[in-house]
Image 1 (cartoon, rainbow, N blue to C red):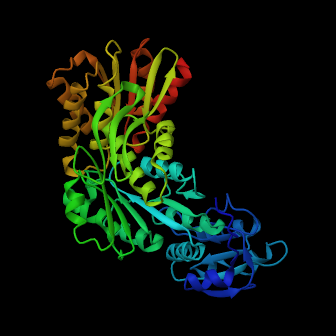
Image 2 (cartoon, one colour; image 1 turned 60 degrees about the vertical axis):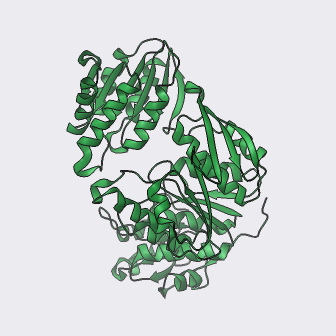
Image 3 (tube, one colour; image 1 turned 90 degrees about the vertical axis):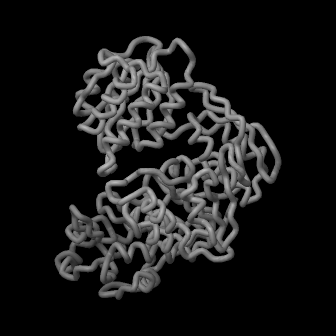
Length: 475
C-alpha cells in the first residue's frame, strides 16, 4: 500500500490552475479541502460558488465565511463585500475571481489529478458502469491504495470533486464517467486524463436526448479522445457498436466478452438462481472457474471488464477471483435480501431496457415453486421510443415467468403491462399504480410467503420507497 506524502494545496496554486486572480487575502494560505456546499464544509476549506440551474452558490458566500472558509472562488465580485468579510472570525479568507466557477472546479480537479501521480481508471457505458467501478476498486484494493468515485459523482461537477480527493495521493483512482448529452464524456475525459479506460456497452439509455443508438455510441466513444500509444482500453467485444468505434485506437486494447472471441472471456454460463452464476473463465493468465453472487449475464460481463483491468496491474488471477466470489451487490443495485418470509431483489436505484431485461432473465432462473412478483417503475428519458421499449420489456416479463406484475408510472409502463397481458399474463395478475407511494400501499397485500419480489424502476419514479415499505411491514 502507498505511504506517499499527501499534497498540500495553496490558494495561489489553485488560482493559477483555475485561470483566476487573487482579489483579496493571503495568496499563500493552505487549503484544507474544497467544497461546493456551505452546509457541509469544514473550517479551512475552499468554497466554490457553483451556479446551477436552480441555485447560485454566490448566495451562500456569507455562510461559507461564517463556517471558517479559508478561501472563496467566485465569478460575481459583488458576492464579496466588506460586510461579508467582516463576518469572518480571525484572518479574512482569500478570494479568487474566475470567469466560470464550474470550469474553475474542473481545472482545479485536473491540477490535483496531475500533481497526485495517481493512476486513473475511468469507466463508462450505458449499463453496468457503477458495478464495474465498485468491483474494480474492490479488487485493486487488495494490493493497492485505491480511491473511487463516491456514490454517483460521475458528472461535470461530481468528477472534479472526486479528483480533488486525490490530495492524499492514492496509487489508483477508479472513476465513473456518466453522461446524457453529447460532449459530456469529452469534458470528463479531458479533466480525468485516464491511463486506463473501460467501455462496458451501448444501449438505449437517455435516448430522449439522442436521435439513435448510434448517436449514443458516438457520445460514449468520447472516452477514446486524447488517447496516446500509452493509453490502455478495455472494451466489450460482444458489443458491435463499441468494437466499430475502437478501430484505430492508438494504445493497447484488451477485449472482454461472453461466448465471443476476446482476451478475457466467459463460456459455459450456469445460472444458480438467486445464488448468482458460474462460468468458465479464459484469460492470458490461464483458465479458471468464475463464481459470483451477482445476478445475471450482465454482471458476468462487468466482472470480465474488472478482470481485464486487474490483469493490467499484474494482480494474481486467483486473488482476483477470490474477491469476485465474495463481492456483494451494492445497495439498491440488484441487492438480494430476505425480509420476513419473502425474498426481495432490490434493483430500485435506476432502470433501462437492457438492465431490466437482464434482471428479469435472472429472476426467471429462480427455483421452481417460488412465485415471482415484479414491481416495475417507468423507465424515463427514452424519448419517442419509450412505449415501444416498454412493450418489449413487457414480453420479457412473461418470458421470465413472472406471476404478478405491479407497474408504476405513466403511459409507457402501462404499455409494458399491456404487452405482458397480450403475451399471456392474466389481466387479473396485473396491478397498475401511478405513483410509488400508491404502489407501496398495495404491495404488502399482494405478496405472500415464499415470493421472490423484484423491484426496479428509474430513479425519478422512487421505487425504493416500495422496498422500504416491504421492509418496514414485513421485516
